[in-house]
Length: 298
Image (cartoon, rainbow, N blue to C red; front, side, top):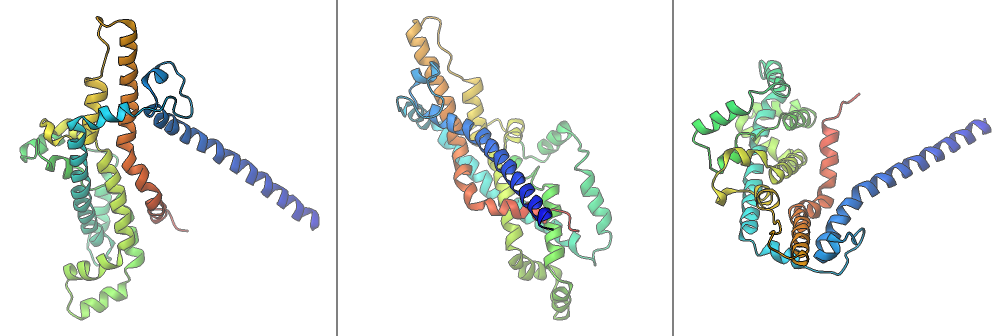
């Protein structure tokens, strides 16, 4: 009996060591690229071009950030991304809850059929061209609504919202409200929404991150540069209008120009990622809760 207990303790220790080793290696693989990008953005262009930066900044310099923040399109893109994230999150959460609530009620006739139709869209879609034509024919092309409405609802978020409502909004509460003459709309806004703070926070977080990183929709539906989100502005700076040294420059000037171009790229990555990096530690628990809500219960 003692030997069996010792073997279990030894196996647990081995598992703990292997698990911690794996997590430590994973941390290095994730943290090092991030640290390298930050260090490169804070280093002198010559140090970046000569590959002297590998962990910490070399010849600390903020020239790349000065170049980034003097670009007016960066500020405009930031403002547009914040508008899309705020308004898009509110619209998406509201529409998701309005769809998830009836699917969570047993009294809703045909809810299983509607659920299957919604799940079908996870496997098959109409395609980019039909969606583009729909957006254009509805008069949303080259407007802010083209970023907010076409993909306002995510099927997976509807499923986790429906699961949460089924498990947390009891039938007794619904029946008591109906006896008192409460309509479904009033029950939704007076009872369901106040009792669904956790899932609303989860949905808001998921949609906010998606809106901040949204890129392809803006590429398809926007032509006015005043409406471009930050991701499109960064694309234009990094890819289309990238700083390539002129053939008329001397070698040293070309190296400096190329080095500045590299540090600016790193600074742009930091600037675009910083809001989510700052926000994530405070909302990590909501990510975990969202995964657990959608898990299979045995």
